[in-house]
Every structure is written in C-alpha cells, then in structure tokens.
Length: 362
Ligand code: FNR
Image 1: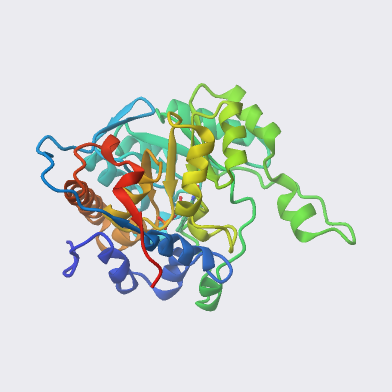
Image 2: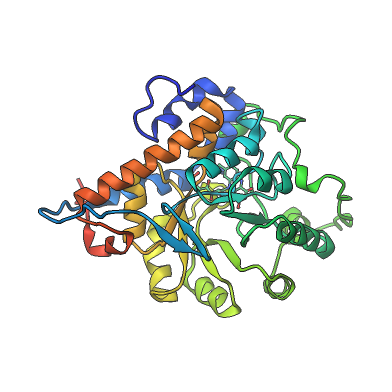
C-alpha cells in the first residue's frame, strides 16, 4: 500500500526513516566524509529558477525521448543502486517490476542483491547493466558477457568509486552490511590475490587503488563488448572530451550521489561546462540530488538529455515495494509535465537554458 502523506516524489525521502532501521537509512542517505557533496547536490538546484511562460499551446505536450536505441516515455531513469535488499526483501525484483510497469529504463548495479539474469527477466526491454571493473579481467569479461546474454542494451561503466570512504553518519549509526545483502552477481568469484603492503606503502595508493581502472582498462573494455559503453562519474570537462574521443556512447555527469569524494562539486554545477566541452549532439545524462520534476527540468535545461534517480528509488522501495517505486516515478513524471506546461515547453527539446534564470543571492 502507498503510505498516507505522499503527495510528491520527495515525500518518500521524508517518510523513509519510518520504513527503514536507522543504520540502513544512514547508509543510503549518507555520502562520504561530512556529506558536503550530498548537500551541494541539493543546494545547486536552488541557484536556478524556472521562468513561467504565457499563452503557449502545449496541448500536444509529451516527454518521450529516444535514448540509446530505446523509445522511452520520459527522461527519468533508475540509477544503479547496490544492495537493494537493504530497503526491501524483494530488492531489485521489485524495482524491476516498477520499471517494467512504467516503461522506465533501469540500470542494474554490479552489486545488486539479485542476479542480473533475474532482474532482466523482471524488467522491460529498457535495461542497462552497470559495471564495476573487477580486479581480474576475466571476471569483468564474464559479467559483460552475462549482461550481453541477458539482453542488456548498454554497459554503464562507473569509474568514480575505486575508493569510497565511509559516511560519518553511517559509521555513527553503527551500520554494517547485513549477511543477506551479498552481491549476487559476484557469488563464486574467488577473492583477488592482494600482495601484502611493504613498509612505507600507502593503504590507498598501493592498497585500495592497486586494482583501480586506468585508460588501458577502458580501451580493453571498449574492444571486448558489442554493447555501447557509457561512463558514469564524469565531472571534469577534459575527462568528458577524452572519454568521448575514446569511443564511449555517452556520459553520466555524476559524483556518485556524494558518496565518493567529499568536496566534489555538485553534478548540476559541472553539467554546463561538460555539455559545452562535448558539444550539443553528444548523449549526456546527469544524476545527483534529483528529488522533483522541477529538478529534472532544470537538469535538462542545463544540458542533460535525461536524469537518473538514486536514493528516491530506495526510499520508495522501503516505503511500499514495487508499488512505491512505480508511484514515485509516476509522481516525478507528473511533476515534470506540470513544470513543462508552466514553462511553455511541449517537448523535451523545448527545455533550453533560457527557460531558467539564476536565483538572486538573498
Ligand atoms: C549508489 N550509487 C551507485 N552507483 C553505481 O554506479 N553503482 C552502484 O552500485 C551504486 N550504488 C549506490 C548505492 C546507494 C545506497 C546509493 C545512494 C547510491 C550512486 C547512484 O547511481 C547515483 O549516482 C546517486 O545515487 C545519485 O544521487 P541521488 O539521486 O541519490 O541524490
């Protein structure tokens, strides 16, 4: 059942603490360090206002878009979010059913609680697989081949999470990953051989970063799969140009919801520079802090073709399972429709930068 008191998509965030235990909620809501980038992602939307337009005919309005060979009903995608059993016993199976019911493109995480094959069977044809490169190339290749066989339409290679320092709020809440939240896709993989650190070695440089991907690994992946490869975690315009030139199908401007580098800029703040660097026609998505249709509108106005929603799906899942996720997506879509109508935009291509004006500092 949909809980009482949900009027807007963001209400799922407000009610989630009632549906999740404190540790799990802190793990999902938190970022890393002091959560300054989590806060920046949200406050960036407050720097822009949407200017209403009058007398425009939007009766033929719609939010359809073509993306990566798919016809989607709206530009709201389900971001890869790991360990969904933290939010609901049905985990990604529930999210996948919501995606199928609403025609939403779901990006399934490498670290999902259900296998990528089970997710594929439950969600519609609009599915991409998010890849974390594994320390051994044969393990990465096996994941890619499984995704190809299961009918995923693209690989989303996440490159901004080679190391993630814990969130202070999750630490303070005493969160530990419960035993039923193991990553199902990685079952049976032998742990990588990690040579002991020599004296003077850094725990980060010679430790956690030992297996971090490099440009070589990207070129290797591009040569090994027939699927389009999108890269997620782009914030620097020069990286964006280099990734485009390397042959990536598109990019996702993202700071991993503030979970990777505390102090990284808001995704929305970087988006215009990344768009300018890659040029107008190149596919660009963004996530980080999207909580409403108006947020999605601002993101499209500043240069994204579509947006991804991370935490909201976990909150909706925790509150009401598959129904909650479908309802949250429906609310976000309606909010986007209403915002477009007020701004005189009948189609996504009408959402140009001049629909926004900078908010004056108070
Ligand atoms: C994530 N994110 C993420 N990204 C990714 O590429 N692979 C993953 O497995 C995960 N897992 C994950 C778990 C949890 C609990 C969260 C909150 C986030 C990042 C996610 O895809 C997305 O970038 C952010 O969540 C977007 O910000 P919002 O919408 O949460 O503000």
